[in-house]
Amino acid sequence: MIAIGFSNSTIRVWALTPANLKQLKQAHELEDLDKEADDIVKQMYDEANTFDTKALCGHSGPVYGVSFSPCRQFLLSCSEDSTIRLWSLQTWTNVCVYKGHCFPIWHVEFCPHGYYFASCSYDKTARVWATEHHQPLRVYVGHTSDVDIVKFHPSSNILATGSSDTTIMLWDVIDGSSLKTLTGHDSRITSMVFSTDGKFLVSCGADRRFIVWEHNVGHKLAEFDLDTDAMSSMTFSRCGAILATGSIDDRVYLWDFLHLLDEIDTDDLSVCSAPKVFQNVRAVLLASYRTKNTSLLNLTFTRRNLLLASGMAH
Image 1 (cartoon, rainbow, N blue to C red):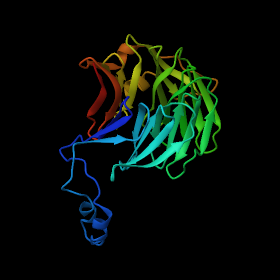
Image 2: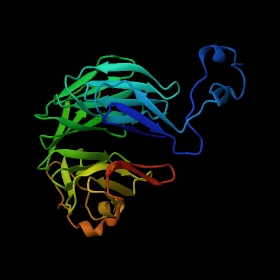
Image 3: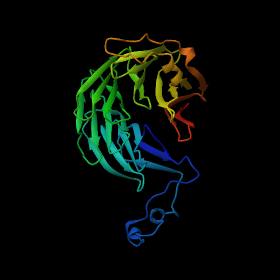
Image 4: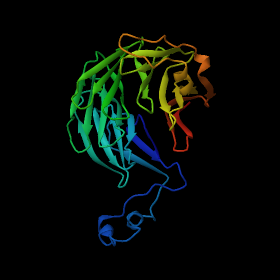
């Protein structure tokens, strides 16, 4: 499935496989099922009422971000109306509304293990929530301007926030403490991603600067000034060898991340010992592809390492 939020406050979900989207049968029909049947899960869905796309309506302002739960049974959305909504992808209904931010919410993301999620807003804060609680569990305060993007570490124990104040802050999800502030961009942070093994953080900003960080000690390992518009999305392949980035000016880039790490000495990193910053962009850029004049909003690798891209067609 793929989901996109629109400026008219609607979210639309599409099926990407030949199998259409389905929904659970009515409650009275579920009660009549044999709970011990081997195919009980299949019987729970209404096979006679399927659809290739579904619209979800509930927000009262433009939708700026969506995030699927790891189990693919729920969808989060955030909006200019200062709310976050949790949607069931089994009943296709809104099951909860979260209120806590005072201004538009720019981004929302489920943590890799589900149940918890993070949001960020024009109110200069990021927040961590649990799906069963209406109020946030943690509020992260420290940025001096909009928090534009949030990213969970693969372990779910660290949260990275990127801001219009040009900094990236790392937070302890458990106790809410600030771990580190990364400085190196000259403009707002537009995209971030942790490496698959969690050892590195990659960021891009509106300054067209691409930076690779060793986030434990805060060192900058690589930095490229790109001849392109800001990167709006970044994602790693399943094995972590390839990094894909999508730009606002309709291009997809593929980077050889393993070769980049081979070019950097990461063995003796410490607070007092920083490696030389790698800047040879041609050595690690594998390829770039033009779309049909489409500003890219999101990239993701499938389980078979097929890269899917979505954006706004002009």
